[in-house]
Length: 312
Ligand SMILES: Nc1ncnc2c1ncn2[C@@H]1O[C@H](COP(=O)(O)OP(=O)(O)OP(=O)(O)O)[C@@H](O)[C@H]1O
Image (cartoon, rainbow, N blue to C red; front, side):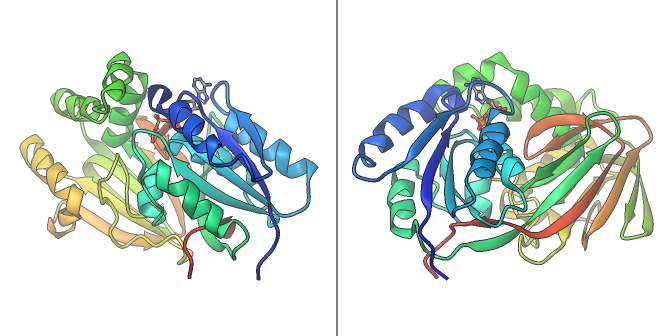
């Protein structure tokens, strides 16, 4: 069913080291004749707070467009989960863009505005989200993936790196992650992982990481979960365990096209309720944002948010 939506933009001016703001300045010129409101985030978690506030004060149909990277869309969806009058659209202006890839959206921000303008009042698609709960930092929503172990460590190191800012300014921000993969590989000690998936216990020795995916991509274009489907009411779980550092590096390369699944050290299956515990606490990320340490718990929230996705 088609509905008349109020258009709201939430812009993270800092995403990809200011690229997002430059994009927004260009895009806003194409919006002169369309009524809309704009809000700018100033710090972490503003995306969730602004989205929630806007959605709570207006019960009419809203189209909230997040402008920024995966962290920005992560925050905005956290603010509007389970609010049926809100539909989301996205302009990718960050360094990773896994959300745009995984939800089949245009990855060129300048093309996204035409896409959004043409579909502003068209029917939206309902998608699943994941809910994580940690012991120390409470709970939250994710739409791409959560992960614990080596991948979350690399994500944390990359997010905190000063070099990422500088490299982003010359569009080479992803190199930071490759650098940390290589340096941290020699320090990291894989440990025993205990998963409980829909009531079934699974123990993996020498585990590098576990990723629980709602859609296929993570880490800036790596196809970690080729079988993930954000509309099937399930997560796809990937465990990488019991392999040498050299083989991990080799498998790391194959993840870009999803070739890693054929190796015996990579386990992959679906699940809905998962508890994750490592022998020693390890880092946890949600949609590439650092959130906590293990243990934590994840469950699916089926069809809990709406996205302008395509013309069909
Ligand atoms: N005005 C601001 N100044 C500084 N940081 C901000 C501001 N607004 C939001 N943030 C924070 O910026 C962080 C990064 O944003 P985002 O993830 O969208 O961009 P990115 O890191 O460039 O892209 P990606 O996650 O796709 O690699 C988020 O954690 C967000 O909370």
